[in-house]
Length: 407
Image (cartoon, rainbow, N blue to C red; front, top):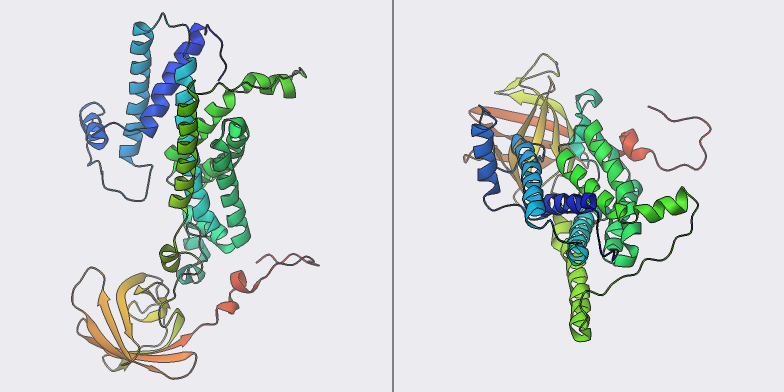
C-alpha cells in the first residue's frame, strides 16, 4: 500500500466501507443465521419458513438476507467510523493488515476450489446414471457438471488457474498478478453460475469483488502503463514490523501458514478412495439393462406403459443402486453385496427393513437376481452394458478430423 500521508475524504470513506464489508464476509457475526431469520421475518415480512440447514446451495433465502444485512451493516459501520475518526490523515498501517487478510482468505479459497479440480474431486468422471439419462432431462447445472466431468485435461487446467492465482496472492510482490489471474478465473466461474443456474452466485461474486479490490491497489500504475503510456515506478513495500526479530518471526509464521493451507486443502488418500476418478468401485459396478423381469411369477415385457417394470439398474457408488423404470422414473435403493455367499441386500431408502436376494453370475456380462421386496417376488435377468458403447467414453482426442464428429 502506498505511504501517502494524507488521504482524500473519498479514499478514506471508500476504505472504511470496503474494510467493513469484506471483514463481515470473511468473519461473519456470531448468531448470523438467527439474526438473518429474525430480520427476514420481522423487517422483510417473509411469510414462508427460512431454512438454515445446509442444502448445498449458497443462493438460498437466508443467503440473500445475509447479503443485504452485510451491506447494511457495512454502510452503518463506515458512517459511524467516518464520524468518530474523521480527523485521521490516513490508514496506511491498517490497510496493510486489511489487504493481508483479504489476500490470505482469497488464496485459501482458491486453493480449496483449485485442488478439488486438479485432483478431480469437484468434477470427477461422469457417473453411470448420467450416461443413460436423456439429454433433455438434464438440468442446466447438470449440463455443466457433465461438461466439466467429461474432460480431465480441461478440469485440471481450470483448477491450476485457481491454484496458481491463490499461490501468487500469498506474496505482496505478486499480489497484483495473482489477483489478475483470479479475476480471469472467477469471471468465468461467475458467468457459469449465472448462466447455468448454479447456486453459488452470491459467493462467487463476492470472491470476484475481493480480487477486483486487490487489483485496484495498482489501478493508477495499470492506467499509466497500459492506457496513458507513462512510466511506472516500482512499488515500495514497507515492512510490517521495525524490530528485525519480530519481522523474522512474522516471516517464519507466514511460511508455516502457507504450508499448512496447502496441506490442508490437498485431498488425502482416504478421500481419493471415496471420491474422484480413482475411487474404489463397488462390486457389480456397471450399467445393467434388464433383459427379463418377472414379478410374482408374471413376466413383464419391456413396455413403456408399464410403470413397475425395471429398465436399467446402475451400480455406481457403494451402498446404493438406482433403478430406472420403463416410464423413465428413477428410484434409489440401499444395496450391499455378499460376494462369498452370492447374496444381495436390498432396501428402500430411509427404511430399516432389508430384503435378502440371491444373485448368480451367468456369464461375464449377464447376472440373475432373485428375491422379495415389499411383499412381491422378483426374478430379474440383467446384462451389463459395455461403457465404450457411449460416444462420450469412446471418442478420444484426435489431431486430425476430416469431418466434425458432432452428435
